[in-house]
Image (cartoon, rainbow, N blue to C red; front, side):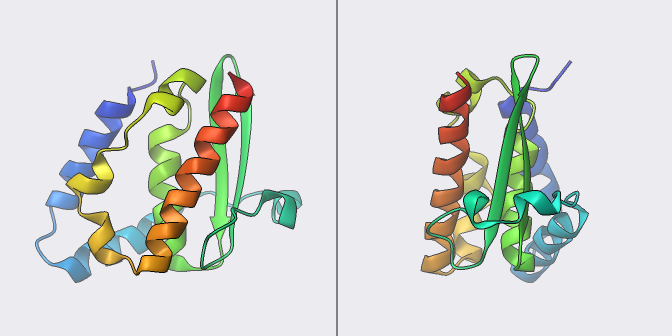
Length: 138
């Protein structure tokens, strides 16, 4: 059975709490991005670009058995780590769970402290896009 968003968020917080230094947390975030499965090249087109991101972020979603699954990629290692976190938390969840998620892990791991204002705007754009996909599938 799929873990709840809250359970996955708690795991992410625990993982980030293993690191004391900001640089180590950033390195871990980059490593998460490197582990993100490659997105099919047919989704690396403008139709799947997330608007409002400093880097290019491609996001595709599909529904299977009432759950939404996300695939993503970015041309920036840091941004790819950020979208990897969001995919980890939201992929495999119901549209309602995604729409109603507060994504408190972002504050709990102090993700904003790693980001420039443009990257923060990009993070918000990614979340909006993921919730829009969920709304479309609801």
